[in-house]
Image (cartoon, rainbow, N blue to C red):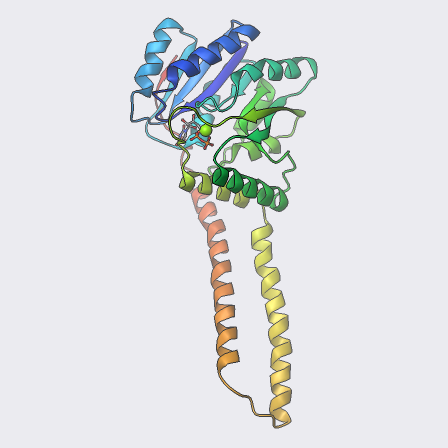
Length: 305
Ligand code: UDP
Ligand code: MG
């Protein structure tokens, strides 16, 4: 098998036919020997039926059916674990990323000796608010983590079998795939492209899901939040020692201390700082908890090969 393409699908019934038409024709230009692994991430519409109907025409379309909705990072992971190709592509199922670019990625893997090639979005066409939030996330993420990949990258990529093996060996549960993909190393290159907005259907990654993904990314790739915690704590302690010295000095020199205000405001301030950072510690503890539970990342109901 030359190429495997993994596509997560969650309630995309309106898109399935054009998606599979476009991807098969793009892949046909590279090689006839490919498979498209659709991962049905617990769709509640007719996505699965549409894929299975398409498969009757072209048996290179395969389906991993998950037992429920596990989220799109888990869906990718599921599909990747079934991929048999020497070159493995990843692409969202909403045609925001152009499948025609796979031939360029394939070329770079072959001729330039890269092991991973990912799409770098030089422009986006999503709604203003979403674009701004994504930009903010990428800025914060690249500052806080030691992941130095270009900022605006996502799942759209292609890698060799060897890179995939390393990629799949990372078994953590809170998964941020672009971060993990960078983590494995190897020789990585990228192609520039413009990310269009989805033409059909609504984004299935709603604000809550994207927010959770951003938190997974930051907390699993950065120690800075927890480091901030003790640094600010230390500064607070130094200040309070200084403050107490002043108060004591005033008391000894007989200067009356006036009012509760200062006492109360500093209490409130310290209280809230403590609460905030307790929350951050909680984030880490929650993640430790999830990792130790050691539940599978996804559960497969059926694989239609
Ligand atoms: N998706 C999925 N499971 C989910 C949410 C989304 O498999 O729980 C799929 C979805 O069908 C699409 C891809 O993941 O193919 C990206 O989703 P979306 O376009 O909503 O994300 P965004 O463009 O906002 O990152
Ligand atoms: Mg999308």
